[in-house]
Image (tube, rainbow, N blue to C red; front, top):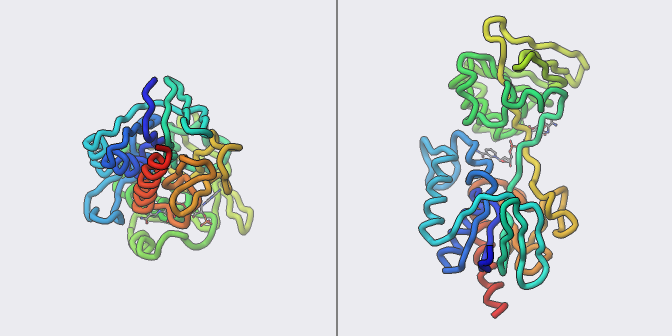
Length: 312
Ligand code: NAP
């Protein structure tokens, strides 16, 4: 691609789309590069009730769909490509994707994070065959089956509640004896008759025969292992992993300052390289939410505009 953009945004989640909205509205030529589909993690979220203005029946995909339309309305372009290498020093930044090479005066990185794997034998083999990281995508496959959710944070508990719409039972497997999730969410989950809990427990192994049918769990206090086998009629059960996220910063290693894999920025979203900004879950911050991602994106775009003005 020969065009030199004012701003290229890498990533089409709430941070990237908010950045593109602000950049587009400021009449900057703006390109969003998204790997597959807009949305990032929020596109996998069944219910969004804490983004201002979202009250009932707002799903991640419906919110993202509106953000995407808004971005196009303000003139930003969107392409689908996976960036494999970045050249960020100097006045013209270059991004090398699988399909094309892209150039811009400034870059906003909003690549977010991906689901942390449970980390046990059999997990990879049975992903998509019983193991999932997306309740919205895969919950309906487990209609009237037993479902296990690994994790005790907000995501695990909210998605477990959502999965009770489908599963005969939903069991949270948590490595401690209390949930990390917000108390308001906990109140709901403890009242739900379909919910069960396995405390102080971790998953040690997942097994099956083409599809998942056996899970070995271990009590971390006693060391006792239990083998859970699928009901004979069901032949399988669902295991959903929600144990946090891993930042997608591999291509920025040795280029940008990172802290535990997250990009270090100042409060204006500036990284250690002039003209390069980071927004959303990818950066070091205290609260990773849609509302804070959107806020980061807006700040990054306004700062990118100032940076471009300073070049002229
Ligand atoms: P999180 O808060 O980091 O929770 C991860 C959970 O997984 C914790 O319960 C943790 O156990 C457990 N865990 C981590 N590594 C594990 C391992 N190797 N084996 C077993 N369990 C493991 O992640 P999250 O729930 O995805 O939330 C991420 C951020 O988004 C948080 O800031 C959260 O508040 C926010 N969020 C907010 C909402 C909402 O407000 N509606 C919804 C979703 C997410 P420990 O508790 O023992 O550490």
